[in-house]
Image (cartoon, rainbow, N blue to C red; front, side):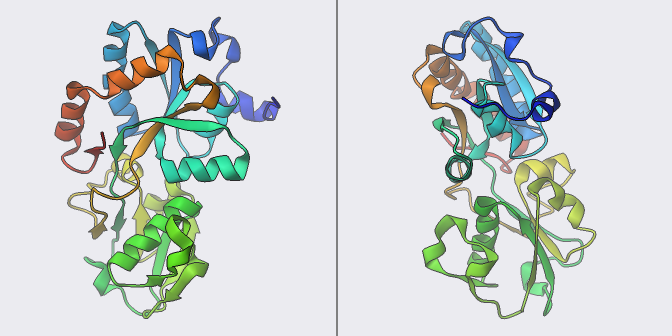
Length: 264
């Protein structure tokens, strides 16, 4: 298996030598999470897993690309930050061999604005920021479609892009940005689609600050991912069982008040 560039591995701040056991044998594992709700939830999972003999080191990342790179190249044993369409797209585009082993939570995506109180108030030619990755960008466009602002080619599916917009009555102008940058873009655009974890991290309340939001039954339930070779390892089931507990579910419901929803 080829390794990523040295600079990239140093940037991760991780070392394969940190543990003497292989991932399949590990009783101590490293889990990559995005900062914010995913990290908070995993900190609740951590002591539950420890009681079952599995020690977890939680490692936070600040983007959506590096956690899968780190998992593919063995710098972590699992990650919890993405939904299945995103993982499938990463596997296809980057040649990863990563699999989902459990559902976790749903983060209903929302649109936010500092200039209007609803999407209907957007004027002709308004600027709208969306994610620059295919799955989340498509997700934002489908939300706009559900709100009646645009129409998207059905054939594009969940990875629709701006090129797949078939009707745009208000001639909205789209700006595609890294998902982590979207909260900051609110100073410069009329509206922006923001993933809930980044909204919460930026101090936005999805329940009161969003001007439009997905329903909780969206197809974007988040997952725990591991390398395909580790999918049947005993520690995986221990991790999943620790996550799928009433204690974790109660924490999610009480801590996030509907902005993050248990998906199992």
